[in-house]
Length: 378
Picture 1: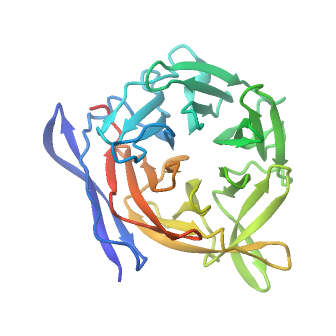
Picture 2: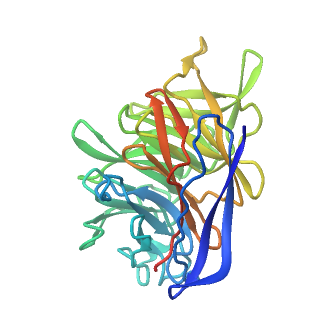
Picture 3: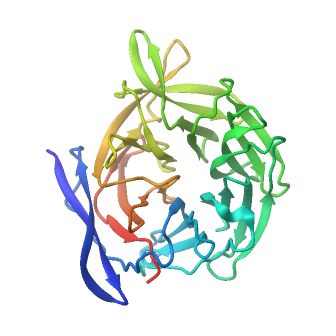
């Protein structure tokens, strides 16, 4: 039976509830979700602080009294020098921080923050896509210190990083960087960035010489990176058409993953995310201008065809109306118990869903504890 819920973010000014309210409507297509979620109302101050969410990531350190992760970093991709930069939203207090770092008034590098990731020590990394650069922000919540760890790394100026993800391999800290165009050939590329030495190693560059927009994430447990073109590849196998995403081992080995259950053209809405608890991959499928289907890909139970392709079950876990997933604005908490979705609407809301995993290979979206957070300074 399909259930329907509404999550409300009401507009407040100087602590007074106004008559204006906003809603995104979600429909549950699964049979194992529990009852309607808890709803939270968060202050909104007419975009005086954050106004363009571009990349969200959970803090790996901050927790509430129940031991739940409760801090989300977000990159504000505002056109305003006075606003763009790194911010944090506290789920417990329901407050947005002042700008923590990366003020853009006098630094042209900082005109387009596009993604953010956090290492296990709580350091934050922000990537910029126009003048390609990565900044490390240490002690972001207390005494922020920002350091540029990567500048323009290509020979042509065509570098166009769009996503980053933190990973540790062999006791070395890396960022995995997903790039729309590298080294004068417009190829999508995936590279590792050694955080200590700032050295860049291009692991993979596509051979189609096309500048195709895509997004990526990494499973820190297995070391496999995953990427998907926003207009997904379609592949035929044994007379059946599948939409396809792709995996990449950091030795450069790639493999197509055919999505059983999605055969038509697939338009992904600006983000993919790996759940660290069960390794499933999630993304939002754009069905029309205002509706998104949230898709879960069961990678743990994928099977390999004789062709060498993997076949994985893709299921719709939820559908959202009046939902627009922001660039890189899909993120799981470090323990996989919460999923955050950034919605760059007129309120720049963040929706947070609690998840439940009945067994290691299966994850279902759970509605309990859903938050609607308007990402604003209170």
